[in-house]
Image (cartoon, rainbow, N blue to C red):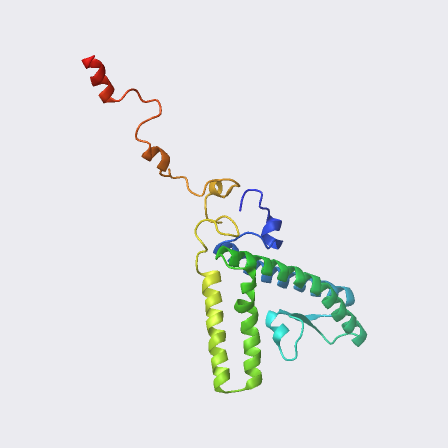
Length: 227
């Protein structure tokens, strides 16, 4: 965006557009940051309460699992009293939920801005990301049948479409209804800057064959010579 577009706008705002490179960065940064923060939290709690940490995991698809669960977790060792392990787990989830919410907000905001880059509403996040998970869940309930095969085909098409458009294809060239082109030079992205710098055809001047300040016509010169 323009020069006043700050890092907070990139992380948390749902306005404007971002290109492919920034979206790739958003995907990796959000997942890695959440994983690191959760690992640090688990290690700190384990050190405080004297409980070993066996593993920390982060998986968004756990939300759609059966049974559904939080999309992150930690496995603590069985050393020490059971009450201490329970307290450690409770504190881990209490501290992990805000971390995960911030990470998902960051990921959702950048996804919406990437959709804007393709001149699509942010509501396209539903068919691109929510619907494939729900269709997969419905297919698991129905078992093996022709309707399930059709649902799996739709799921595959949506997932492939989302991957190609969000991560591979360039956005709209030039400004669209959501803002200026993020790949355009900064001078063209500033507020009030022209869309194009090449000269345009001035229709009025091209059609104005005789200037307003023109002198007498050639016929008048001939007439005055005869006089």
